[in-house]
Image 1 (cartoon, rainbow, N blue to C red):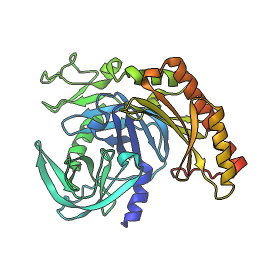
Image 2 (cartoon, one colour):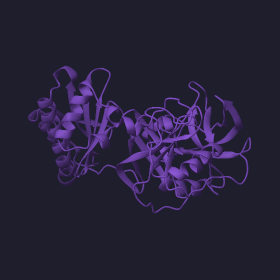
Image 3 (tube, rainbow, N blue to C red):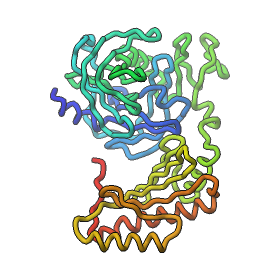
Image 4 (tube, rainbow, N blue to C red):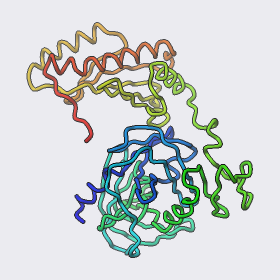
Length: 364
């Protein structure tokens, strides 16, 4: 298959995964009716935020955790109208064959990188991985490694820090083993015991221990009450967002970042290491004409409003708020965020209609 055909085939089945700890990638296997990813992407979470080309952003439960093979399965929230992709099982992976790694590195959706298999079997911690030179980065974890026939041959799993394109993918043999063993437990929350390799479910778990060998196992669904709870400034921000009607679980982009929608506007909130809480709403883009009148209007608005201000970065018009953590209270934060959300939604249309500003490009 041509590279373009492979990318077009996989875009509809690729899934972005977000947890309070970070983001990663997954992919839908219709033959098993599951979303596949790495265990370290969803670790300690009984449900995660997922989104895709045909999946609106939603929470979905983690069905299966396999810490030994670093595999996890997530429930498919709806029927997907996408061509099926298949696991490559007809021939072994060969040194030197061309591969494509697909995922969402650093939040850059549907990124594909080409390379070759440097070594088809590279032993690491007792498992054989596929070593590749295709660039993979944070956020790629859990995405598919695809051969020239458009078949999944592995799961992009880790890189060597400081290495130059030293990536490793878990081969299909381990994934197929987990898929086949989970079949009889489909729909149940389950985990593989990393000692005896048996499947442990809510039905057969012995307290916190594997019923087969007695090793302590972590079944996230049984510790749902102990899952991530924000503290400090993050807790205040999430309480404010909840009060303003936002779903904080869907909004989280790591422990210190949130992304919320206010009708047509998207606002990103970040709590940075310098102690500032920054809210940025990218409104629209500068027009080619009438820029002087637009600048005059923006400067007047900055003079007349409190807690928020306009700025221009290259062609982007941004409406921002800035709060130092020491001055953040529930009441002040609620007032500032509410004002930012409402103004962002309002000016998103106002500047386009009255000053000829250009709409922002959206992800296709």
